Every structure is written in C-alpha cells, then in structure tokens.
Length: 432
Image 1 (cartoon, rainbow, N blue to C red):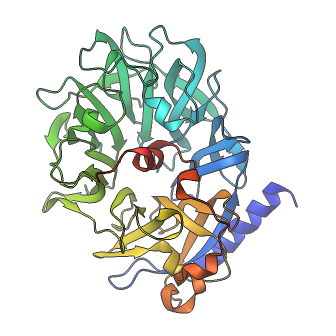
Image 2 (tube, rainbow, N blue to C red):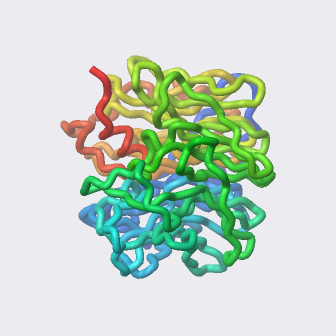
C-alpha cells in the first residue's frame, strides 16, 4: 500500500476516534488510540508539533541518520527540503493554522568562523555551513536573515499573525562565547522577531546585564518567551541563565528551580501559561509550569525517574513532555500532565498498538499528541495519539500499563538517536 494511502487511513481512523472525544474535563486524563506515523525517510523521525488543523511538523532523518529534513505530515508525509545545504528541521512545536511553519536549514555557504551555531544540536551532524531560520509560507521555504554583521539565524515558532520568533547573530565578537571546537561560537546573538512581512525584523532586549538572548515561542497575543544569558555555545546551559517572558517588548524574569542554567521555556498558550525545563537544585533537568499567579513550579517526576522536560501546552492547559532516568524501557517515557496529575502516556493507550511512547513533544487544542515512539524491535517512529474521553481509563483497560507487553529487543537506552533537547538531556552528564 502506498504511504499516502496508509496515512489517509490513519487520518480517517483518527477522525472516527475524535467523534467520541469531548473537551478535557477536570477529572482523569483521557484514553488514547495510537497510530504509527512510520519513518518517512528511512531514519529516525521526530514529530514535534501538531496544530488544530491536524498538521504534524518536525524532522525526519534520512536512512543512516546522518542528515535530517524538515517534515510535514498533511494527508501524507512530505519533506520541505533545505536552503541548499545538507540539513533542515522543525525543532519546536508549531501551532499556526495559517499554513505557515518555522524552522532551520543549512545553506551551502561555509561559515567564515566555522561556527557550529545553535543548529548543531538539532541536526545529526555538524557541517560548519551557515544555518538560517526559515519560514515555510505558501508552499515555499524563505530564509530569515541575521542581524547586520552576523551570519546565522534560527527560527523556532510562529503565531497566527505571521510573526516568527527566534534568534540571530550580529557582528559583535562576544568574549563570553566558547570558541573550543567542535561546538564553537564567536558572534553574539539576540532574540528576534520577523514578520508579518518577512522583510521586517526587530530585536528583543536581553535581561539587564546579559549579553545574549533567544526567543523560543510566541502566542497569538504577541507574548514571547525565551532565554537570556552569556553566549557560550549558543545552545542552552548558561545561555539560558534567565527564563524570560517579553510583554510589550520588555523582558520579565520567570525565575528558576534553584539553578542558573538551562532555564528554558519552550511553549506558551494564549492564557500566558508557560512550560519548559530547568536545572533544579540537584543539577538535574525538570519540567516546569509557569503562571502569573504561581510563578515557576516544578512538574513531578514519574516513578523512579530523575530528569524530564515539558515540551508543549495547549489552550486547555494540558502539558506533554518526557520523564526519564528511571527503570522504564529505554529509561525514557512520554507523559501528559493535566489537572495536577502527571501520567505516563503509555498507561493510557487502548487498542492493540505495540508502540512504546518515548517522547510527547506536541499537543493541539483537541488534545491530539505527537512524538517519538519505539517499535518492539527498537526502530524509532513517529506517533499520533488521539484522545477518547468516553472510553475506559487506559491504565485499567489496556495491556499498555505493563512493560512486559513491550517485548523489546535487548538494547541500551544510550542507543536512542534523538536531536535537539532530547539529545541534550540524554547526553548531558548528570550528577553522581
């Protein structure tokens, strides 16, 4: 059967499931039917976002996992191409329903400083070529420029007003940058907004005293979240000394969980609820929820896990992410957090899906979830989880609550091949 036919069957089945769905209530989380999105280009895929039209966005590795291509699943999976270089990716949840997504892509032009830039964490390999943020609009990929004097840019999110956020280099040689190969950086970078016209660009200020900043997401009210700190490698750590919310262009410090690194907001809804991850006082990463009323609050781990991250939140306040470090298969599991309850998403699966859900990285306002899963032989695939609110609770109705069902081939969790934050969290040394 053709891939497009298979995906059409998935969409039709998902629609059939959604007929029985209701809006999220105040009680137990829903059950889920899970569909296998496969590995469209032969390597490991990572769907990271789903909008209210059902568009799924992310990246798909080519066979061999040496290159990645930005991918959309819309009726069928298709690649968006690159800007002339080897790699492209959509690495953050995209929610726009206006036919637009934002991501990153390499060009064929070598970076004069041989910088790895922020893109290096979200590609399988480092080439040293210039990497630019892009807007995919009206079926075409358009490069987003850096600030004057810079070479690289990065686009992470877009709202329904056509505003794209990210960060971009300027021409300042920043002494707080880490110039040690293979992950080296020289130029300063600042939070940026492009659009609505793609020729429009402006800078958001870093937190007072910080030289560098980056914007990570924007909602339809124009609120922007991001990070601020020193340059370092232009990827997390002390580049994320401060987690920020920009309102009317002014930075507000969101606080932290007891440490001055990796304070990274990833997603926000139109209610101003913000999720992400941060180091805690033990030095481990932990998901958080920030609200104006309660500030930054840590999300609990599941079982014996000791690390995690919250990746996305919808308008209903449902949060998805990853909890890891424990004794579960692959030492990582997808979660949903709803109404103060943290739940392993695997325990809510109904039906006959053999998949083990590793990462939940995107959720739309209907509660549909996308992410990365493992097949019984260890192959990584994308998944779509469709909620069924009227069905019995998955933990009671399904074999999915038992890890014995998953019959995985002997395989260490270190063999998982992620990009972006999952890889950074997996590879970053943890305290003894």
